[in-house]
Length: 165
Image 1: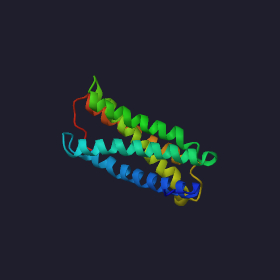
Image 2 (image 1 turned 60 degrees about the vertical axis):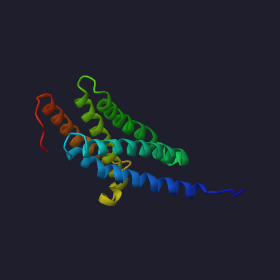
Image 3 (image 1 turned 30 degrees about the horizontal axis):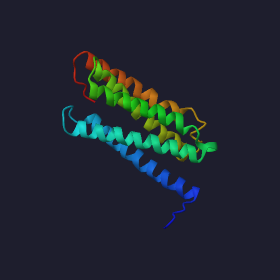
Image 4 (image 1 turned 180 degrees about the vertical axis):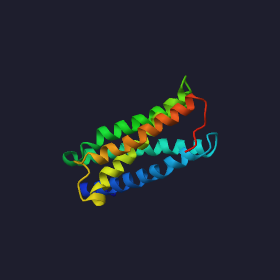
């Protein structure tokens, strides 16, 4: 019987690469779903894939936090919150309860804000020279930009208009 032994550092590296690749795919796929015509086809396929990518990003973030708890414990609550938004938006579209579209837009938009926040926090130092973990701007900029956009789109939906971005 062959036994595979993977060092903790190698496992962390493998999970981190998976996390980055899946997160990047979600960041690319989000706008494709956002701008696609809202009918069965590209929008629904991209949205379905986006949901599952968000689940994998959440699970890989949780595993990274577990593997390096001292440094990355904060991945866990952020990952859970990010996926909660994505799941809320996904379930709203599947169940189509009253005001489902508003919930779908808020959930998917919120998850995309979370993904953008993570991208900024991780890359803030290379952009500004200051660590993103301790700096307030990478944590709040995506919310400051994204929340009014989500509110505007949802207002347009409530008014029966099709927003043009």
